[in-house]
Image 1 (spheres, rainbow, N blue to C red):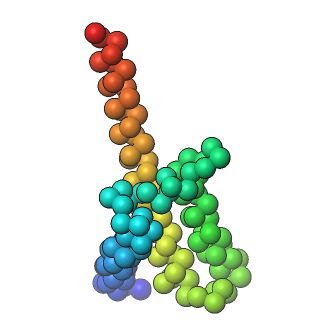
Image 2: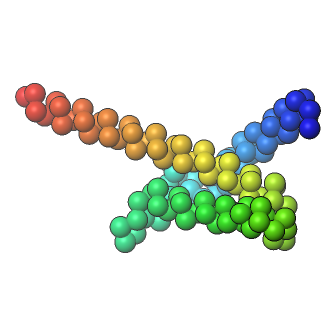
Image 3: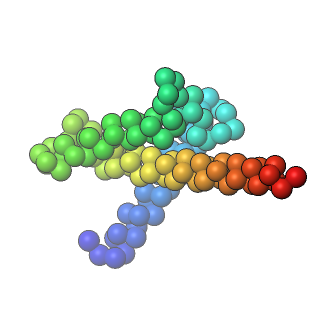
Length: 117
């Protein structure tokens, strides 16, 4: 694959991810303003949003592992389904991690401002 072909493949995937984010994002969050709401709503019995994310991600990753080991798809095109979804889930993970970091900073700032009074 040439650099140009790869760049075209990459740009097409990015556009598909944007479209998926608009359609599935709205569907999975029931229109909530929080793009990560689906991971938070599933938190029961001590699960964190990151744990929920891992369960969702592993579903797609296990299909990729099967393909890597056997060379066979499981009824779907590996690129258009599981690779695409893993890329999207990794981006959602980035959102969860950044949100957690912001909350930690806010908590540190609150603790600092409370202790300095």
